[in-house]
Amino acid sequence: PPLQRILSLADMENVARHVLSHKALSYYSSASDDEITYDENARGFTRFFFNARVMEPVSHCDPSTTILGHKSSIPVFVSGAALAKLGHPDGEINITKGCAAGNIIQMVSSNASLSAEEIASAAAPSQTLFFQLYKHKDDVIAEKRVRNVENLGYKAIFLTVDAIVPSSRERDIRSPWVLEEQETGPQWHTDGEGTADTSDVFGTAGALIVNDDRDMTWEKTIPWLRRVSKLPIVVKGIQCVEDAVLAAEAGVDGILISNHGGRQLEYSMPSFEVLYKLRKQRPDIFDKVEVYIDGGARRGTDVVKALCLGARAVGMGRPFLYAQSAYGEAGVTKIISILEREILTAMRLIGASTIKDLKPEMVERIDWQLV
Ligand code: FNR
Image (cartoon, rainbow, N blue to C red; front, top):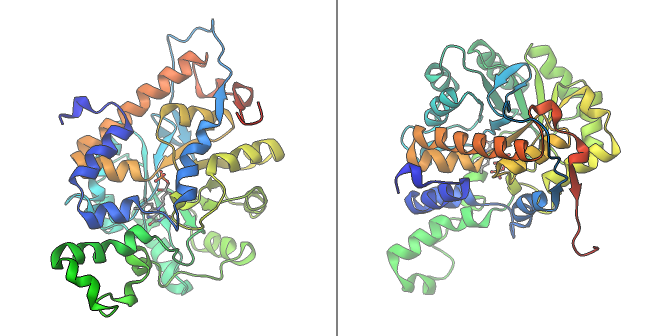
């Protein structure tokens, strides 16, 4: 369909589902085990409703903010997700150019299909890029990587801590077998087990997570990263209040509450619930570090609710992969403009004309079963 018929991020995902190869769609859409955390990430937002205020002047409404001091037209950023080329030949560069046009920040994955150099050289001169780091178990190799991206002009390191081992994403693991079955017909079933390559049992994801450091600690790893880089450090993959507190005590600049989009620990708490608990139990943390969340956010209202609870910005992973797969760079700018319109509408209708007007009392958790 023509781009103007795309009204929502869900519409964009539908187009992507039609154009993506089986392998790419399996990799992008997959989540762990029964995909409960994936589903609940999205549902997590739906338990919260606004206490809207009216009769506030909102003809001038400004959804812009800064993330680690860098300007962003809306409080949304791209969460680094691997292998954009599976969905489109230009890969991550679609996202880079789309973010330049829409003035938001892209976090580039350690496992991008293009190199950190290629992506940095596609960026506009004043464009901000962050780098998502999978720390190699060999400190020397890891340090080289960090120094390289710092030299290339990346402005922050997002250290991913929730993916030290691969989880089981069955949609992804099954994908080559499904393809094989389509090619060889039903007699494949009678061939016994021999056909499947069990070395690939963790699918595309397993092939990527091989050399990661499984022994990271607050005491060792954060000071190491501070030593090798001057860049701000954000810990990506905080899944409970206790670790949010430890991260703040370790002196990082930000935390990204995330369960990897439901792709790592199955039954990890939905991100929005963790944000809610952190706001209730440790409001002081929001003054010490910038707090972000990702996982399941698909609407401007999701973003605005998270900001009411104190999040600085909201990351999105799959929506950008789907958008660039469906329409390349234009798809990326399209979803940024959809989100901007949705955020503006929500802000105006709850009586907020700037990000600073968004307050915890503007959202409330409703458990319909108890009402
Ligand atoms: C990811 N994610 C991810 N995270 C990371 O730190 N490094 C990576 O290389 C990847 N790769 C990756 C690939 C794909 C296909 C997906 C869907 C996700 C996780 C990502 O950064 C983010 O946390 C989630 O995507 C957020 O959830 P939503 O927005 O996809 O629901």
